[in-house]
Length: 597
Image 1: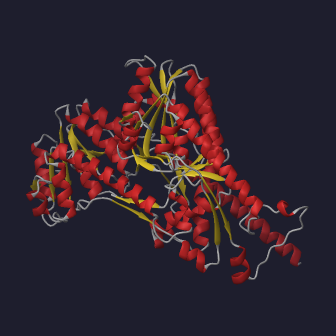
Image 2 (image 1 turned 90 degrees about the vertical axis):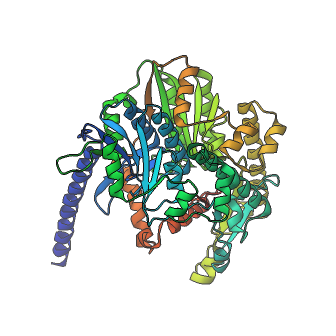
Image 3 (image 1 turned 120 degrees about the vertical axis):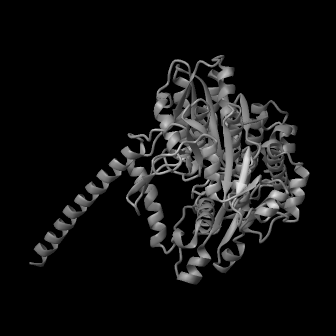
């Protein structure tokens, strides 16, 4: 009797579970169809295009499944955002642009730089660009400063303080947990600071030197950009920040950071007077950047189909890891190599732009990608467009290109390698009572693992591997960039450079945007203005999207709720866990450096 009760309960569970999975799958499918934009919002006549950052602006996008809301979410790419602004120049329904960043989306400093340049081009059309905010953060003001007219709420605040780089060190935590870490890096890689949080409690002098130089150079770029549009001396902007002289609306107007102090209804009145039409309810005809970008993308389907004169775009976005898969936040070496190979073998593709936004990662995966990049470069023009990060492994895969363009605020270089093996045997034994033992054919047969200490011979082998890969890295950079090995050594050592600095030292050919990289690639292929853009990317399958979402659920099951502890904890855990789970040699810039902008 008990058998049949158990059998019946199991059968019911299977049936109910199958139905639930089917319902979820249907909802997921319908949500994806909606996300793909099968319906569009018509742009009303005499509208204003609102840049409110309701959505995240990212380098590359994929549909991600949210198991909490049973919904999908898809940010817009910087390429889509720039294309929308370009299209608005000649759209008779768009009277101008209003930058009012009251949404909850995120955007990197480099992508702000990209959109600023698009807005500067937009202004040449003669249409207005205005900006308004209740409270300006520093990054929000950097974008808003491009406007012809900047205004803010009378009781609002404004942030203008400079830049800083913050590093979280976890050595104290590891000590408390009885976790030790073996660090391996070439002696010449004094700036390779990704490993410092695991054996230091504060920055080394070399690391502090590189980060201060990086922050100062990036801050100078921002001040120069703002000064040019606001007609203020850049040195004066630096002095304002040093003394925290601007905090409220009156001070912002006094120092010419804003033009007008007003309420939002005053802004609306101004927009009406500038030709923006209202609907029957008296509301402004407006359309957000995200919706407008979706409309433009649907009206230009060339991104999905190569013509006989195509410039292909490939995204290298995320940490570089081994394997062949698709996932948010990671570049799988074999997967990206296959996409590059497809571009090489496709005769319709005349040139390729690779958008690199990566702090690096696995040395092996980086080399697999490098090989395909080299083969591609031998057959057709290859231009690199560097985003927020194109460092270490991210630079390694960029080196074979014909031409490299970086945003001024890009972090690149970090030419160096390291190896790191944690040892948690004392944690297991002393805290949990767990011990590990082996039956070995020889002492060296013991696997290199976090479950046991390394042997002296294993340490020698890993250090030798690190040194050899550093030699390979610098040699390939010298070859790809047409530099002597001595020149590479002088700018290597694991040091991180800004995109602006990288032009001066030869790591990058020019400062510019994603848009500039596409124009350069077309020019190198002698395509003139007669070409189409074709994005090559492998979308996540529903199963891979589900697995990606399951990672978040697993974290919650372990008592780590990112919604409670915040994104900072998420980043600390993710970045340090990524390093711990890579037992090979890594080409990675410091992932736990937070650039406060």
